[in-house]
Length: 481
Ligand code: NAD
Image (cartoon, rainbow, N blue to C red; front, side, top):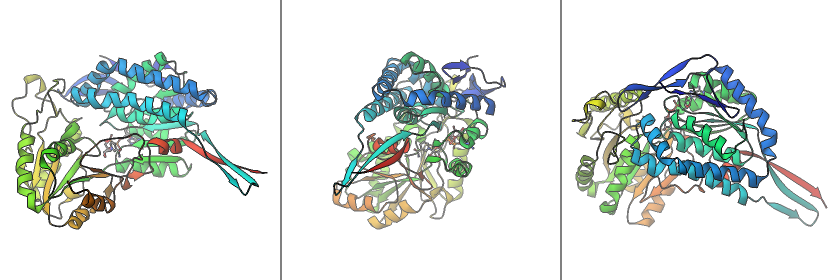
């Protein structure tokens, strides 16, 4: 059976302990490969290797660094089909989605930050002709980059690209549930001419290797995307070293449909925002709020469109939703549907496994898209992130009620507003306590804009110049003239 290995100092290596984790194909529930179950020793080797490579990489001319990043992007494009297949098999996402979104975005991450670093300029100020100030940016050293399982390559490369572009070296810790595409990156790095040690990838569990990475004194910067509870642990583990930390965490996002929304455009958008990638996108809108005048019409059309979604084999190009990522996650999502039942919610669509799946998929972690209405106002489901294909729909009367409902959450990641009245949309957007508001669109990303969350959805912003800010230290030099 295939073994997914660590990539340390430019070479694939077995974990020192010789231990491996089972890696499941979520569409069959069967083990299809083994993932290195690394321990602190592997992680320390990777950190040492990144540390050794740092001096040379930071003084590599920016044009050369950018050239290598551009090559990595080209190689991701050249291997797009194989990477999309691997991502789909490993994560359960439809291969069509991986081809359209995940893999192109991974290439774009490298291309974008190669360009960004080439074009980056710093400021200088003059004070009365007597004092000249300018700023210098310097990389910090070894960046610890930790990613979750929902958008494996997309999110890991969102961290690697700016970290390396700015002259840091890196140690990556992808999710133990989805290590496959990260493990394929090593060969791409070597082919692109990335020097050994500049980017290392250590596979294994969060509580072991992840914990070593965040608490190691030789790693001054941590970029983490994952759950809020893990983010809190990481903040505590990094506090005593005053590490630079960026946290992109969970969400409980609202989709707000105003009475003047154009439902022809809105329904397809809300379908994506609800169920794309089986609802396993931190930005999915799990709470749909619809103005009461159009509530019945919206619901009827939304349910009709949901019924059309094909759930099944992620390798079938027509599939819209594949299986959930793992058995524990599948059980968690099912338990939240049960909670909705207990809280008097009406499951008006879904809530169960799809029927008629082929024999080979009968043990896969499949769930129908699920729509819940009439759930009690005080249900825990309004506060808990499902991270699966489950939405609640509720009516509201006034826009300020919608804002109140959207903000009634420990999280503050994103929201979407659907309306033809932009004046109302602007006012509503300004009142939402979230990092990103989309109007008449969803998950429409421009890599130049800041990305991050309010409240328990995280701290810090990445994206464009904000990433350059995060992955460098800024120094002011003042000269008396
Ligand atoms: P998770 O927090 O369980 O794991 C994320 C990563 O952290 C994994 O690589 C894991 O191995 C590692 N990890 C776990 N414990 C650790 C520790 N003590 N020290 C260091 N690393 C540790 O999250 P998940 O289940 O993989 O992902 C789902 C969560 O991610 C959801 O809450 C989702 O909303 C969130 N997410 C947020 C964003 C965003 O941009 N805000 C994007 C995607 C996913």
